[in-house]
Image 1 (spheres, rainbow, N blue to C red):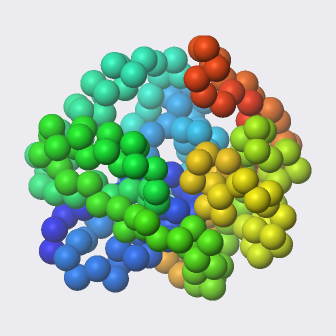
Image 2: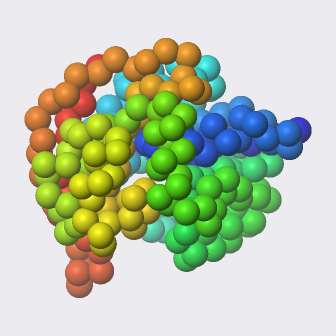
Length: 229
């Protein structure tokens, strides 16, 4: 079997991708790979505390490699950091870098290009699957997750803290993808068939955060649910 690592976001797409990879006869996932904000010790974009990330890895019984990124960084500095870290993994015998991406063609092409320069292959277990069906499978398999971040351009902050279940999906506006593949929302998975035990956590306050958006090139306003271990 080929040695692989999974880019672990702490959310639902990563969890379901890992579930599918566990049944693969060709790929062996031997590492989780996650980036965090070095100063705030939170998982990038999802806002999950590092100790809850550690708890997930412990429950999954898979080693975790954490990359602590500075709060402020450029695209060039990010690329250099990732190239260095991924080269280390390549030298350790890893062949595949796995992702939970579903249909964003430009992101897939970017990942494949960057990895090819290092000699790694990209693998996308969920690629081109219907996002509605993905979420039904997620719920059907018994995964448990909570919405921890919403893009306020698409959803109001009342969605933060809600369980990812059929009621959540039914409440989504028609312009929001069921998997949040366009960045509409993010999740934290705390239980499911791939976990040895449920992850205990406490819900804190919902807060808003704005990101600088030069020339309005990306969405800038988000709401987060504070989680505590």
